[in-house]
Image (cartoon, rainbow, N blue to C red; front, top):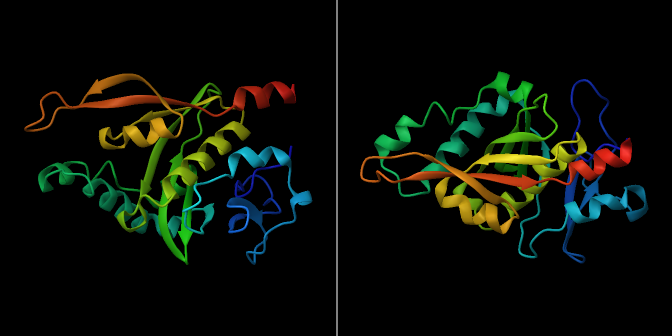
Length: 223
């Protein structure tokens, strides 16, 4: 099986392409070599094509595996992104532990970061599960300065492609209510809600969403 770009893990050798580069001519993301040079079209499978299209106004970025030492920065990005929404300081403080990313978590999970001009603009995290029917998208955060520039969409597509490459058919998303429209625009569907009341918002709910990865089709082709 040919691994997706950037999907290196400790138990397997690193794939030939570890990064994406943005081509301003085609407005596509494409695998590139370690120096950032775009790989010739013939050197990577055509099945990547539907995974690397992005918005034309998207920022040039690299998506790579996160490092344990970057956990404090990822925690900061998660907290900054949550604070972008109109929550009180008390509410944000109550969520601080849930938004904390540790080095051990990065080591044990599929955590990938999006780099823009050498700075981490956002990240996503999946935690491998025994089930091939669904993995949970545990984190997807974009720093406020990089919001609405295609970073979140690129990270979500990367997460879906990674899950699909492991035969997983869906991602489950316990969504931030203010981000529901983003997930819907990316193809996710609301499948339920959980009560999440706050002071002043007794009826607040968190959307429970499902995003198909096409992993089921890919798994059948391997059998």
